[in-house]
Image (cartoon, rainbow, N blue to C red; front, side, top):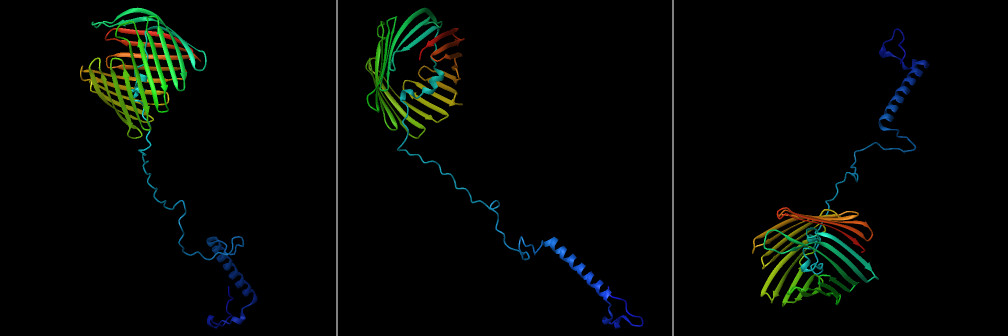
Length: 371
């Protein structure tokens, strides 16, 4: 602060030359303190402008800051184009006669009644022999609603020859029946199939040959059998999942002919088929693959000549050590087949079919040895 004025003088006549040294020191000290406070306040607000590590910073000015990559607006994603179908490279469909193959696995298991024992012995990699013993009742056709059964037992001897291009199967039964099957690959695309049965009963023996030609995206078959039986079928892939086909046949011995059409749609998870024929038969089937081990199947059969309608539902369950298949239909028939694997080459079979309406109950068990 400045010193007081000498007595007898007004404030307006204050002489600056008379300022003493102490007053000057006090005034200088107050000015330094104010300057330090202002500088400290500037540093707290703006930061140290003389920081040697960060360098001198100019006073901040309003500038346009580009947006960060996280906040930048992403360009719209390109629309996924649908996969184009190459109609010149479609898959080859399955044969016309096997369009219901997946549904038959669950809905038509190989049921049996009584006791059954099968033994197969391989002599080498291509040739093997089989022995089968079957004991149980056999149904006899009758005009009454009741089922007539007679006890039977027979032995069956078989020989098998399996080669990549040739397969032969033969069976001889003690009741006089002889069965034979043949499959031969004549070329890479042409296959010959044949089956025959000879019996002691009149007009019960039959034979049939089937020529199957496999194209790039189609299959065609020609059938020739005894009794002047001729048949032909053709199935074509229309899309990667849809195939359409038709068939025609002529039975000269019975003077009957017919024509039919079929459609099949399959993916990795389901198979749907439909078939209609001039004989009055309409067949629909659907198979849903729930998982790698579980499949569900259903079918619908209708004959508009006899007005018979049947619907069924089945399942196919593959476990680690067993294979279970079963079905139930609209007539109240319940059936199941269990194949339990005890060990490599040793399987146990259980078969059951119950028809409460006809009071017909069939149960069977079996053992299979060998592969």
